[in-house]
Length: 336
Image 1 (tube, rainbow, N blue to C red):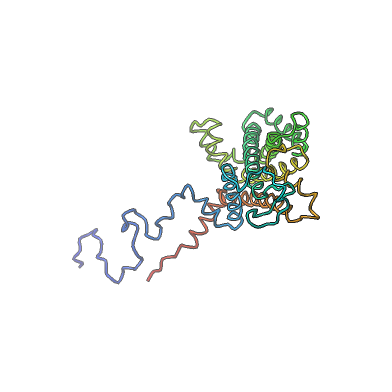
Image 2: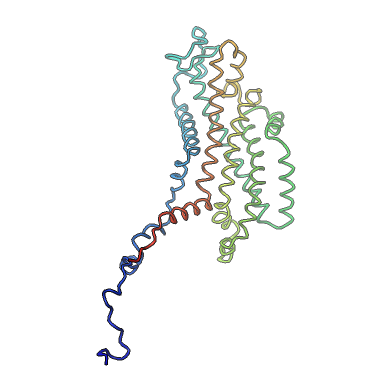
């Protein structure tokens, strides 16, 4: 007859205890030590680390940062006044004090490039702002409104997208004259339509997601739903289109200035400098390289930065990468 009372738990023998490591109750937070930090929300600036980890994003970020820094410095200082003419020192080769040489009027090419960076940054940012406002407005009207408004917006976008950006710029410049604002509005309108055409289907797709329906049920207005839920989920597509539009803005400004309908002659511009130097390309070919190289690197940097930002900010890619890293870091417990 057993000495234990009826219903009492039998004693646990030491050989029946398995070594399974510390339980969740052993940890003050209720989690295993190996799970610590897995559920921690990502930092607000985590996308910057992911962007820097990408070779394309790192290259684009460095190029764009250098252009921005050059434009800021040029607003206060250049080695020489950009429009200073020195006939005695015309066509000087690279050296000191003219690091990149001079042009046919004796102007310092490095100073002209630094001053032209201000024009490039101004046009790129201005065109990006105009394209963002027009693109988001048309995409929202084409995705969140009544059916007849959506169909009208879709027809309007299809009509406007048939006109190339440069044709729009030349039409506007024929009416208002050539200026940087013509380039900004032409590129902004042209790529705002492109952004709307690409973003509108994405908004329609995300609009039927569960979290959007939950936000609508909780009392969010369409504008609040657009800002909190819709735009963050279409941001990767939007960023690629915006970076492409800013790169085309740089090309359009250079091309229109080259044709004489962009920046005025008194405004430093890479395209205008290229137009002035290209007629001497057989005599002084090195002088033409610098503005062409500046345009090429800027356009390449903007495109690569846009691709890197898409990969760094895409929520689906981010969640997939976190899940993959968590699966790789998981070590199954060994029962001894």
